[in-house]
Image 1 (tube, rainbow, N blue to C red):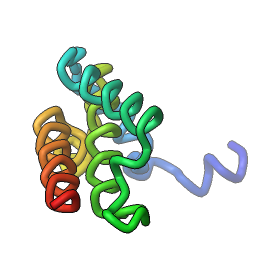
Image 2: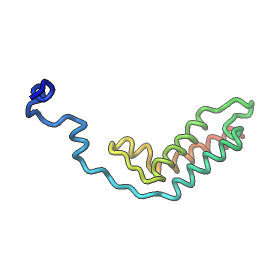
Image 3: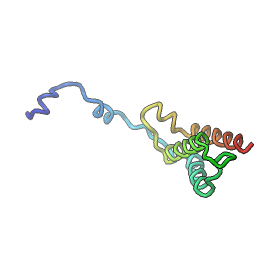
Length: 112
């Protein structure tokens, strides 16, 4: 036995080994979420001024909500399902739509 094997002995599996043994949740592609993500990506790329306030300065709250919606849309849209519950919640299709609603509400409030 080499030194690394001897030091581990027959101890319980380490965290990465336990994660490798767990079944990976299977997700399905979500066309609505990917459509939202693509729309936000193209919209902000073509019209970046929609995320600006009346004075022309960038509104970071609107941008954060829009980009959160975009990120959640890409993650859930391609069918990826994170293992940890908090990340499944933060990047779900429902969160994508909720963040989009927040972004639209913030942009509407900024425009008066």
